[in-house]
Length: 492
Ligand SMILES: *Cc1c(COP(=O)(O)O)cnc(C)c1O
Image (cartoon, rainbow, N blue to C red; front, top):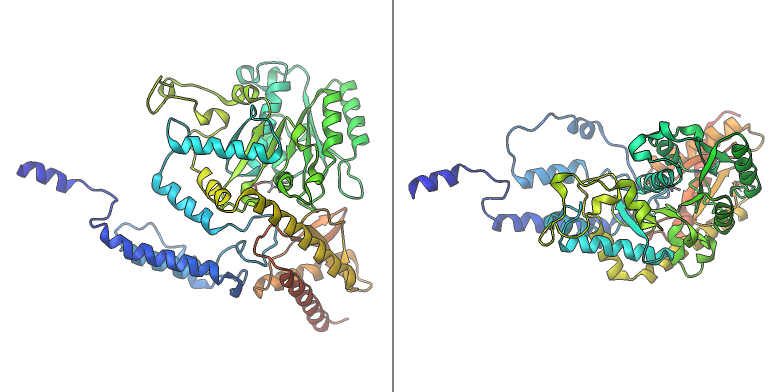
């Protein structure tokens, strides 16, 4: 037996030599994590990293071991104090969710259980499908529809637009490629469409120009008459109108296209109707606001983002497709090494047949646990709460003569700016940018900015279950203070 003993001694593993040692560090990490979220409100939203921290991340590949406790100390010192800030109650930049602790535990357990959601016959695969089924239920899609959890909204949109291409191409694009499409395909979306659609069009081989940006009305919603005119013009010119993308919540101002009108237009014109619902699809679960997205259930495909208004820790997107076979026919490939078996681990359907990834992370657990803990109704109320908070901020802005609302507030995005008497657009932009940067650098609030109908504005996007009204009071008063300070320091 001596030689056997020698052989086992020689074999290495990543497991600790003694599991009892692991507990103490793990409990410390957990305690720190709880304290981190408990006190998040008392820390700055964001802070610039000092030079030592930047230098720390320049260190080269570690070659020899270090105790796990030391590794954690490095993380606690150099990483945890310098987050992006989106878990903070006063983070309203771009458009993100604010995560949640149960979801974080879900991510931890997903990693411990370790399953690969490429598919197979195991419980995590059932849970993955169950979460997709729940999402269908949230937006009113039929049980016969298909869906897949993906990295985020960008990927979910790619899934929808790819199925649309293959369904409308008129040739077998998978076999013959886009070069064989007889009449060039045309897609339509409003001029407010998210930039990921451009990437999708490029990736699909259709090219950016194949996505026609249709003008929007004063409320930044797609102009339906202009859409119909563009479709007619394209047909006359020999193109094949293939797909219309409705946006339920634009990233600039939160505008929601008239989804019912788009559904009818798509049906009349025989187009695929895709909804980019990364921001707003989940309004379908909000009791006070759901009528805003009426018509969403008529879509052929929907992209949405559990890491936004379901506050799942990154990453979690979801693509839904009404016609499950069109979805599967777009992506399914069965190589000899992934054939299903009648029983055992490889029985049943492969989840990777509904998207581009083969190995897939176990994204479902973090969503599943938070939904079970709180129930979908609470998530719906939180969406209404954010929309109400945006209205509250809008009222504060309207009541404050030095601030100017820049777009109507439809959902949870408020576009506005600080006025500056007699200043040019250029000066206003510089002035407001400076206010935004100071609010970030002082750790008070994270806003972002954009340009709407040619005018620069600051943006507050409240997809945050930690935000309270007094946070919005604070940002208004701090903006005014910053404005006064900048004006005082600037020679007239
Ligand atoms: C966030 C967003 C996307 C992109 O989603 P990611 O999850 O960031 O990939 C697409 N469209 C809209 C309208 C969005 O708000």
